[in-house]
Image (cartoon, rainbow, N blue to C red):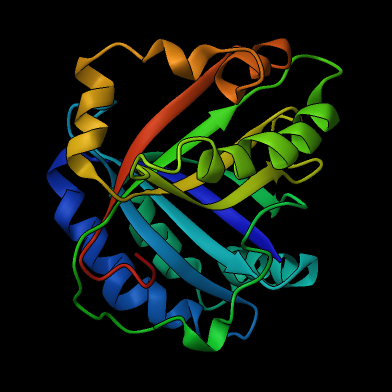
Length: 236
């Protein structure tokens, strides 16, 4: 499985038009092939970054499916739609992701992913992009699985979880920056998330043996983004 992550710099006046084309035209046309499906359509939450940024995640069965998608966009049934979307955005940046060995999500039952719009509640995800130090990528992957993913559930059993770590990815070789990890985390407690913004991090989270401190030996740079799903996003 590959995931194609795209960040669209949408023209402000065309924001609604862009979303409508993706929802009503791109998503069902994409699904006519058996190797690709739109999974997430999300907006970068207001106040948390650059304006009019849309992030989409697309499932690709494998490398061959990616090749098929390239051909469909470059000269096949998706070419005109791709040009139509280009007229509504300034640019788009993309990268391919593959699951880490410890990621809870290793594949997707694609038969269960809707290919037509279905209205549902909105969700917010925290997407953390992490850049391990040079020479520390593989160690970071191993230790984040052994420590962070299990520590988050077990270290503070009496404290309700703010986030649910649903998936963890690395960039596919040759597709983007090599030393990059992406964590996909659903926000469970919105009010508690607000506390992270307006309050200092409690010192008990920064003790030796806890990931908040120990991980600084492997990386000290990352970016968190709050992404809000649209009401029709296939997954939410």
